[in-house]
Length: 116
Picture 1 (cartoon, helix red, strand yellow):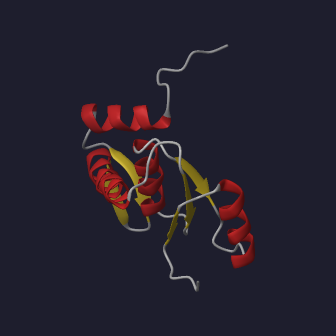
Picture 2 (tube, helix red, strand yellow):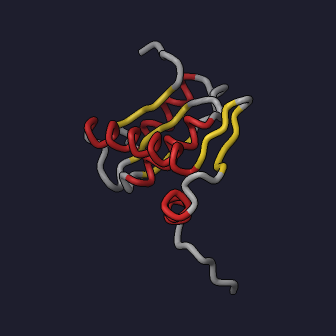
């Protein structure tokens, strides 16, 4: 079996942010984000999750469009050692409720307001 250089995507991301901070990481339309810009955004999201009480091992449901912010959210959840549970934007509210119930998720992130 081939051995990989990193143990996780997060480890690779942090290594690149430290060692190649100005290198391009992600492009969204006309916006470009370097590794260090992306790390700073992800770290800011992580601090917000921490302030909200997200703990290691807890499920975080993420229902967003596939954007740079979604990637930053993914990295932030990994930094918190929580479990990232992606949900496609088109998934109906009753299905989301089912996923929340089955995963015992305490946190829900969305780029759109939802009716409760």
